[in-house]
Length: 307
Image 1 (cartoon, rainbow, N blue to C red):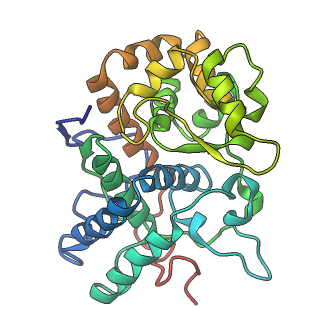
Image 2 (image 1 turned 30 degrees about the horizontal axis):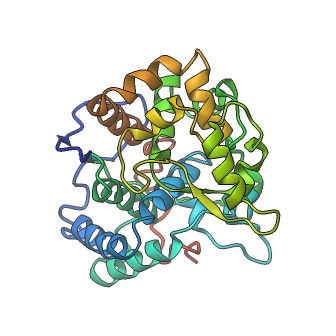
């Protein structure tokens, strides 16, 4: 179901917004958001999986040192960047961010941050995939540090309680965690992330058999996280995990653990409630430990720090 709603953020979160505001580039780069949207649309028209890729990139960036585009930095001889960590090994979409940055540097040099590009591109791609449309504040600046050793993300084998601790450390509640994991309504997972569940009685038998045929001993192919509307951003993920059709351990645990099962049921039966909650949660996530004002920098190339 496509969400026929536009949600405008009119409230304040308990995060340091500083100079963040909706329409931050209205004077300095008036067409910035339009340019981002156009480039993302071209990519989405060729590859609808880009929505899942951007959502993952945004999450992995914000959960390590805050939303500062540190995930985009390439490793150098003297530094292994966040990209080099095992948790980020399958993060993709970097070339799309490069394309957007190149266009914006042509029209508005040293103005639009890479951190804002990730946030805006993710927002636009969610709407393109059928999800809610919403405003985001901009004005983030780019970080000056990116180390693989800083990466400590909740993994696919996390328990609900374990994942909750990681989200709480970033100022996000249990309900917001359940909401954000609903982004698994779109995208794929490699067999290596769920191969150990192929004998799990908490996975529906037909799905176990299907995945057993997909996940051969050699190679690491992928399978859709949502077994029904796999390329549409909707609330179907919650219905699927209620039916024990979650691929990842953490996904299935959301429907089984009393901590989260009620909200899963609520979202499964109310797509509008999920859409509202998702907007609130992802906007809040996008403001974790942001750099504003004169902190950080505006990178000219998202892959390298300015010299």
